Each structure stands twice: as structure tokens, then as C-alpha cells.
Length: 80
Image 1: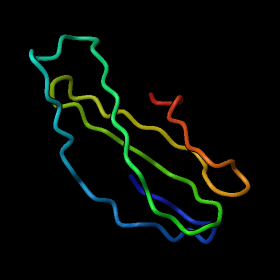
Image 2: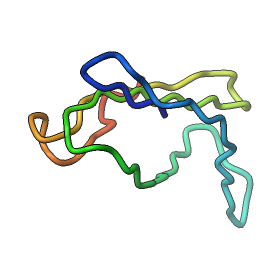
Image 3: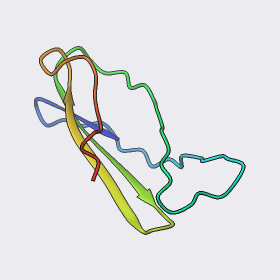
């Protein structure tokens, strides 16, 4: 996840593993929900989120806007 402000300044992009725990291995087409909180300044920001799926080799990504002028919540409904 990277956050970009109105001046083009952006946060460091951490690379973290997201553990998926369950009673069985995931099947093709299974979906998972991952939620996290981000602390940002009170001004508009754009975000870019990307997730690499090692099983399929796909990189899923989403972009959007958050902040006072963009509303108060982010949505990743545009994940590709």
C-alpha cells in the first residue's frame, strides 16, 4: 500500500506477507477479506494497493482517493 499526497510525495511501500490461516488449503476462486488501518494527515490522498498471489502468479491492484474532499472511507471495489 502506498499513499500519495497532493504534492506527489508518497509513503514508503512496505512489502509484507499476509498470512492466510484456515482449516484447509484455499481452492481456486476462494476469496479472503483483509482489513487494516492507515494513519494519514487530514488532507486528500490517493492510494495504490497491490497484492501478489504466488499460487496464480497474478498481481491484483486497486487505486482510489481518501480524505476530506473524497469522503471518509476507501473502497477497493475496483480491484483488478
